[in-house]
Length: 173
Image (tube, rainbow, N blue to C red; front, side, top):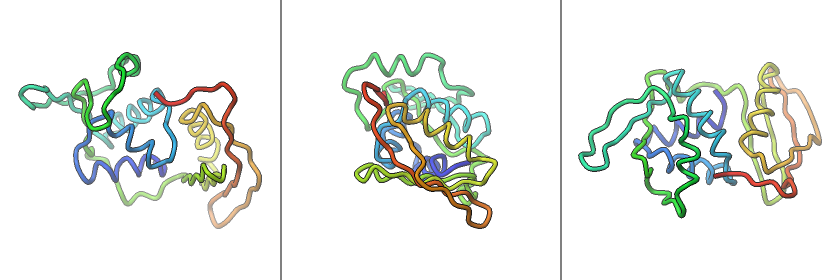
C-alpha cells in the first residue's frame, strides 16, 4: 500500500465511483494526469488483493455485477472515445471498497509533488524505495525525476528531487 492507493481508497470511502471518474479524480489529486495503463495496473493489483471491487453497471437497469479483473482492452477503449466526460464511465464500470481495504494502513511509501516548483518528495521504507521510484516513473511517463537530496529518519528514507517534463513525451490517457 502506498499514498496513491490510499488517496483512491479515501475517494471510495465516500461513495462508489465510476472507473474513469476515479482516474480523473486521482490525477487531479496528484496534480498531473496519470498514465492510464499504469492506473489500470494499479487497479488490477488492488482488485486482486480485494482492496477494491470492480462492478459492471447496466446503464439501462442500473443493476450491477461484480467483475474479477480489469478488461484487457480497457485502455484502448477509453482512448477511442473523444471528449470523455469526467463524471461517468462510458462502459458502466465502477469501484467500491473491497473487504481488505484498510484506510488506516501505514503506507510503505508516500509521495508529495509541487509541480509548479518542479519538486517531489518521496518518503519510503527502505525495502519499498525502488518499487516507489519505478511506479512513479510508470505513472508519469512524461516526467523525469532527479534526486537532489537523500536522508534517513527513523525507518524511512526521504528523497527530495526535481521533476521536469521529458521533451516529446506524452503521458496520461
